[in-house]
Image 1 (tube, rainbow, N blue to C red):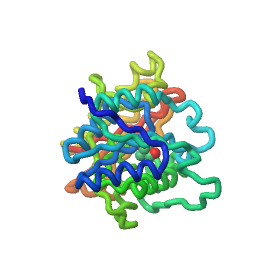
Image 2 (cartoon, helix red, strand yellow):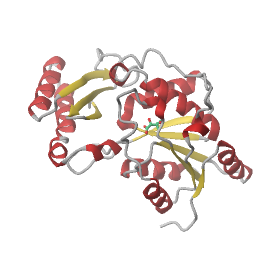
Image 3 (tube, rainbow, N blue to C red):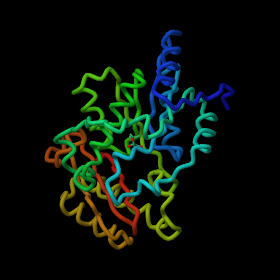
Image 4 (tube, rainbow, N blue to C red):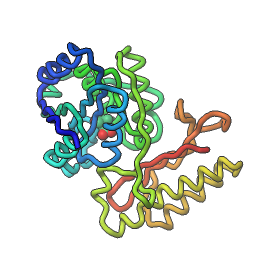
Length: 284
Ligand code: PAF
């Protein structure tokens, strides 16, 4: 357990003051943006940051711009005191937890729009989602100007979108992915797992099992359409009421996979009652 105090800042100018102190001491910094309700997946990203940098800065901001009307902005789980305790125990140096007003002046008129790779998967099923993510992450990167920013591979398309705009906009930050952390039964950790009741929680690991099985079938030469169809069938039998997508795609371009000699992944988003779960695995 670290004894150094976690410094909590809520304004962009205080964030910049803290980062300037680190820089003046010649220190490097990793940034781990989150929407809070931290779990082991987030904490593994903090550890990844810690292993390569002198300082780790987490951000906690439930970004209203990435929720469409009717989505779960109001009910999104929040527990700032518990998050602060976890970051403190993890030895994180700095937490930036701004208000909505601090992040978005009322006359804010700028949106970061990434085209192409946002047309499919979550970009297709959650219109406006990636504009919200790209806008807030651009702001966080420019506010903190870390050496590296780390995002979980569970949101794989998000990671690819962030890598793309950081490159396109010449933002001088290295974007890294962190491996998905899973429960023992395979369910990917997610703050939204808190929505699952006991019955849904028991069914949820079938998401990972279905795509893992299909991925190993495809890797050993099975027909892709057949493997995907069987995985969809498996999800329906397990009680998933709607499947937004279950696709085999290129791991870099996110186009439908046609060339199995390139890295590919299986991506899924499906609903258990009112809860939308996503996951993805490499086809190896
Ligand atoms: O993955 C998340 O928690 C969010 O989309 C992010 C990257 C913190 C932006 O709000």
